Length: 484
Image (tube, rainbow, N blue to C red; front, top):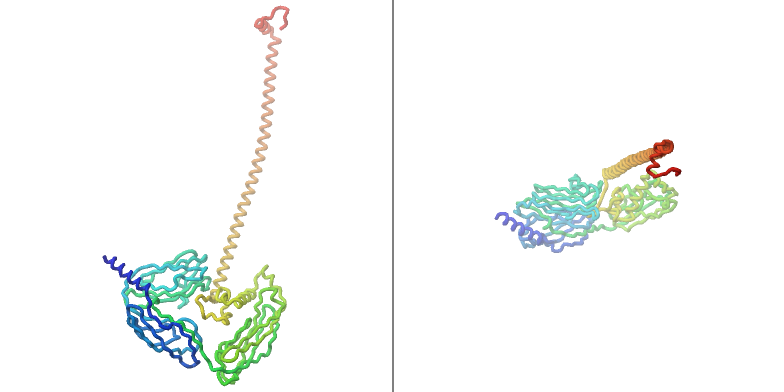
């Protein structure tokens, strides 16, 4: 009876979860402009769409601040929200709240598929009850790691085409992702394990606000001074130089952003007060990885952006001839690989979020990796793991080759031994045939000799023994005067 009641209650709870509307932000998309250094205030209307009350309601991220408040079932409230941050933002912020529950333990197991092809964890965000379990199924062809993105600690390693089950016996909230050879290849997902009784938070009831924030600065003017604009750089080399910036307007130059293919800068995203000059060091590193890219002159642009008119400076770079094709017949030049990865990223920003450009994450700053459901990055340890992975594969391949050589040698020796034995058998057979022929000849000669001997004896008896002749005559009825 108790089991039946529990099943009914659990069914009702699950139905309630499926139909949940939670905390509903009435106008959930906002496009705001904010003057630098000035707080931005605006109003939000929120409604509790659930049959129970929420308390301690607030925004999870620090982009928007509000006083904590409560909402009874079906209640609306209009609050004043404030933004103090002075950086641009384009994304989602989350309104969360606590509610009281007495759901009881369910001891369920939630399956999560880890897909390499889709770079995905499915389902992603999970709300569990203490005592529930997660079964992660790794469909990747290699082992992967689950990483806690809050602490960067390893949760577990799952072998290829295998599964892992983990039971959560107490409340916990954490974010995690799947990693291969040190690189994240899935989105970051959330696990929220709730108490079976008491005040809990469940992400399915969260309110979502899509916020686009643009920081406005008072306009000013700036000037740049470049001492050189033409360079000759051989393959594998870099050149360092400087240029000067000076704010000529009455307002501060804010968030000065420097960018350009083949360029890296000693300083970026900085402010420059009126009348102040600054020397900016930069390095030019041509991204060359094939012979036909040498013996050419390239036109590259340094772009300077901020609260002033954008400045674009054209830089001419000549790369002398260098034969790079031979790298495929010997040891691969590390610079070639570096340049290939970097050039690959700059040609395709989407790929920059992927595996290749992640090897050199600092080189992708111009593309900005802040927006990322799936943003990968390699640290020094990841590169080490990548090298170890392929070194291991190389070692396995070498051992496999050695084992195959041993097998081939064994098979070759066996074939040789078989050939020798075959030849020996043929020799023995030939000898046996000769012996047989000799024996047959001897036997035939003996038979002929014996037959001749017997015939001679019989003839002798018939001819030379008289008694025998008389007997023969009588039997044949020979008469006198007749010849036998």
